Length: 88
Image (cartoon, rainbow, N blue to C red):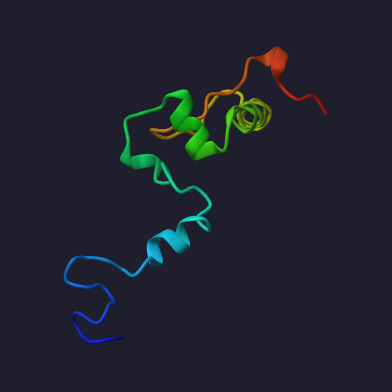
């Protein structure tokens, strides 16, 4: 652990390009914290869940494993309609 102020930032807050070098390695560079937003638009879903196709797949799985939507929280994935559910 370094001393206070030894975090590598200059007085201007510049980190020497570290943020830009690390940005490409982030799994979800934007909208990663689902509880910190009120937005649930299609763009938000793409940022959080990885796109519309993945979101549809999550809804299908939700319908298979939790059709009555008992496991939910404030950013819930609604189960898909029964006709779109996966049958095994």
